[in-house]
Image (cartoon, rainbow, N blue to C red):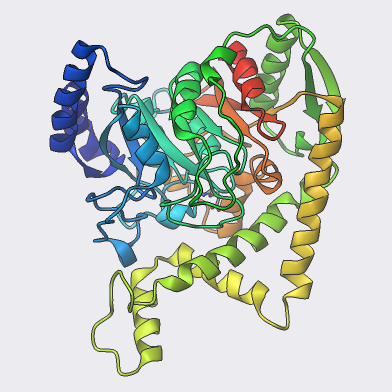
Length: 452
Ligand code: GLN
């Protein structure tokens, strides 16, 4: 009740939820009370969560923050949300995001922008929460959810977590099922928890992860109890500091928080090792070829015929497609579809898409080589703190630069987590990123719990 009341009070301003399901939540809470009394209560019994509006929820509207499926009510539950429900969680509603998870500031949602609950000291400007899981991050930071689900394709869990001062964990690609999660770029999309502490993230991930025969890329590897990794001794653990993440022009404040993280881990008994990931500089360009290519293919299904919105007054089939897709998709989504169809077109496939796939392999090898020397990597999560809504760069490529530190781990499928480590001089949170070996979320959880 405290949570549903807080949602009613704060959501009008923060706009973290697209759909609020207070009645369903309170009904579920009654059942949870009964379960707690009977002693038959799984780990998340009664825990109120926000669910990114990219996860299909049975009987509850699921929009992907897009007009084109703005009234879609799925007749089924995604695997990840089904697992959370089985574990007793209660859903407060569906959280806002960038349309189809494309963006870094939550400014592309068809349901309006999300407000970051944090402000610069003495400055009333509205700050962006990051993106695309900005609604989830803001809800957790504003205490209108105890935790939330996010999805991360190139940084969408980690960057908003950093901007909102919370923990965001992108598991290894294949750790959580993608079934029932609306697709953006299928070789990169991965669900994960967004919480106020590393321990909460560990508990939520244990519930969300695991093999699912309905997603052929979901790994059949046993899920450990991640909570047991919290507070584990870090003595002798090798922490890699990749030289290439010292980007030119990086702010002194980001460098200072990175150094703080290094010092904390050294004190905890870790060995700090300099490493090199030489292809990092190609990460962003490669991501912005591969992700749009896959998005153009995935979003081809929204044609106004099979489901979703259909434009009125079309004079031919082509006209119907054109009008539906023009009206239904926002500017950023249309831009991505155009980039994607361009790089996949017959004349340019080899020059762009095929080349990007080869560079992706080189980026993956960088991580393989680095993890021969170290157990985990430590980097900043984002090149800046949150920025004000009216400071949004006009040039879309400037916006893409936000993802510079998060996309390499996505391209290589590594697990990665953002942990809030300090406030900058203006009072805004700054996060550090831990990148682990494939399916070794436990190490990033262990190290993360020493950093927060
Ligand atoms: N900001 C990145 C993009 O716009 C990442 C989005 C994501 O991870 N879903 O593509």
